[in-house]
Image (spheres, rainbow, N blue to C red):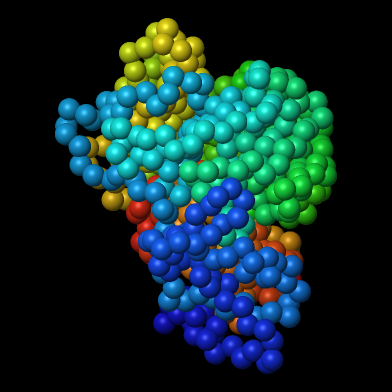
Amino acid sequence: MTPIQRARDASIAWLCGGALMVACGSGLAGSDSATTSDGDTPTTSAGTGDATGSSSSDASSSSGSTGDELWLCPDGEPMPRPRGSVPNKPYPDELYNQPLSATLAFEHHNQPTMLDGYLLLAGNAAFSTWDISDAAAPVQLATFASKHGFFEAESHQVTLARVGDRFYAATISGHGVDIWELTDMTAPVHVSEQDIEGIDYGDIAAGVWGVAWQGSHLYVGGNDTGLHIVDVGDPAAPQVITTLPNSATGGFFVGPLFAMGNILVLTTPKEHGGVATMEISDPEHPVLLDALTLEESYIGWYYGGHVILQTPLRIYDVLGDPTAITTVLEGMETEKSEYVSFGDDQMFLGLLRPNPGAIRYDVSDLSAPVEIDKIEGRALIGNDDQFTLKVANLLVLSDDQETLEGHAGSFIAVESTAPDTTPPRVNGLWPPDGATAPATSSIGVSFSDQIELATVGPPSFQLRDQEGGCVPGSWGHMRTVLNFTPQEPLAPGTYQVVLPAGGITDLGGNAIAEDFVSEFTVP
């Protein structure tokens, strides 16, 4: 009998003892209804199964549990799936590593993101959503913009969250951050904004370069203004609760950042170089674990327990021992580049003008990347197509540069002529298997490929207590990184992180192939 089967048997056998039973996955997926939105209030209508079919009243009634409720796991329920459709099909050989679509708007674009089967293009505090079911001719669904986007406010990171039956995004603005509800990608809703002291349309200084949503907290990398922690327990009323100066976070500008369970990984913006780790089991009082001040880089990124800086390419292990960051690769020369992304043990190195496109590397061994080939950019004047995102066997490339045609915008290329059939696998975990962890822990899992948040929910990501019951909570997401935060501190005992096979998928619809189970203990 597998650990999952034992846990499921335990949950079935667990007697209520008069307590109220609440099914943590009731109505979340696999029903014959689809969630639509007229702005703020989700409604249901006939349609295909979807990822967010439970009602907001169900979600709110279960929040703030004090232990009087018994949460049963949604065993046997269909896995949540996105509404949108992503093509994952063969293409002619002549399209290999070549553009497939025309330019998706000649606008200022930075990091592309996928949510609920749709493409989100993020630019200078301005955004658009796209149906890419026909990747050769994507269709724009909606546009929306921050009121603080008049000057510099680039989307160096976009972070997502699933809270109850709703999807949210936190984005960068010229004065701080905005929060949007993206439960209906055809009708995004502005939920709130949060100004941050010292942020005023800066490129580097006085600008935000990092956002990471975990539980009821949003971590913001404010460069010279330090690390800001925003309470987003009520997304409609965010509040800055902690600001740490750079002297308390490693001594360098705080740019892109990544929450991985109880570890926050800090990296730097362009013209700076550094990496740091902080312990965040008490989210409002992070503790610095280790920091390295390094040679100037363009930007930092995270993949599989490692931080990547370039140019030159350098890689650091930050999760093997967060108190002692170690160098895995130092000083590998590459073509001049700006941003990186990852998928299926490949790194896509976005190049610097006048050499548009992305170099693909095999990073199955992060200590020895191997160059494979190049995905070609467009023949514009002045573009570099430096932001990338692997979606099935396609690659979205975005650019913020001015060209003779206007801003370069985005396009979709074919990165493999064969469909993507590689399932994602876990390549990072915190707390580690067998660890002892605080009662206020979050669980961080990173994957080998980009993850579709709409496939994440109680049937597909479970934290089970020692009786086999599921712990309620919320999910935060950043590309290949997924976090689960319990809604209440954990009681003493042993807990299992359970990711059933066939549940969570990559952006091409490939589900994890094997049950993943790990354990940790709360003393």
